Image (tube, rainbow, N blue to C red):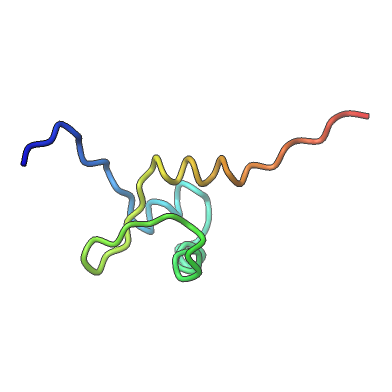
Length: 67
């Protein structure tokens, strides 16, 4: 089986926490509650940056319009 797709660079819990500016404990809570997209690689939890970007965009709140 050959494929031309490349494997994305997956983020660790520490890397995701740093990028989002939150604690690793909070990332672990999001994973436990299945509120963030993640991939299990063996016993490790990893995050696809593209899926995280979509996940963040889905949670974006619209700004207020000036009165």
